[in-house]
Length: 552
Image: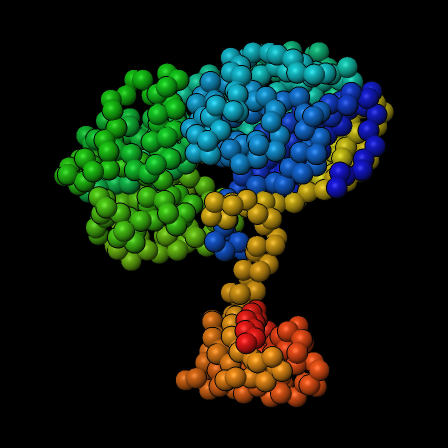
């Protein structure tokens, strides 16, 4: 059913379907003159709360119902939480896609996985380029982040100009790509900006985020201390960090290797667009395994403890080529994404039990964030000077702190708008004018499903187990034999509970009135009551119950 909202052509709207009130799954919409513009379409990853689910994304139902009015999808950069859902959700949207060259290279590889590389056309926009779609005039703004070609967006409309920051930081020496176009941002502020839609990830962190160049210097010093095998795990998309690993290898007399499919995918996309050209080829995992342990430095996926990533397979002795021994070192050149603490802790424990040195950002200067800390947020507001601030890309606490910083910077209006909140930015005072439906979808195997439904059923199975009953009755409803009972995920006590359940089923069914026994539904209900009551009385569980009735 189409969500009922009232919009007016002369008004300018903003609504996030993902990424506001959470980190990840970014999906932002701007509405004006009856048309909608989408900025980013990303994913997050499953955790212990979503067993068996790898990829989670926002439900695009609200905008999918209005796909005829969706003029385009603009991608700010190539991180998974900004482009990872395109390959799954684009068939519901069928809209033009706009991206810079590196982002397009990464996205094409993802679209090929779902057979959409021909159907989903991508228009490549050069750095600093501009174009128009429907009532929106768009200009890409060069920023710095932890991936090549990060962009803010200047979105000009007849109702005012919006600056959507995307993910950003102020890095004076990013190593890969240009520095932030400060002069453009100052000029944009002079031109006049109605609203800034901004990254809130590090709003709680004082100071600045730090520079990639500083990480490189410290990693050279750290790796030089080891005379055995060293693995550095980082986000594959951080091309500057991958380049750093090659430079560190060169400076410490080692050869650089890549381990993990996503490392190689990003490497290939980077080479395709002129990045990493100043480096010799990286070794494969197999080639690296044949080198002396003090002559190799391996860049490895798995910094977040992902169960199928290269580092987890190495730590659990399941990798076909790479092994680690006591005295080797693993450097986590990354931050912990909220929600991944348990999986990373498990990985650390696996590595430590093998006698390895495990180094994190708590121990040494091995990582800088790709998001702005407070001092950087303040500088951005000093340049842009918007009338309205709408914090996004953060949990509730991040949004509130970002809004507080904006007010300190003399921004007249701040609006906290989590997923589904429809905000009218103009004309007049910015305010919430409605709510639109939101939700989460998940890739479960090869199928796209509603996350709440699948996790609710799966968690019930995990915590309460299941009972499967097969029973055979004749036409009159009399049981031909004892029911077959299978207990799954429940303590059986040497078969005692199984026998108790079977006995209860027989008693409940035999106690039915004769007329009721001819009804399959009444017999199944009686059997289900018997199972539920017996399991609850004996062990205090409420399992999932599946009754198979065969009538002959």
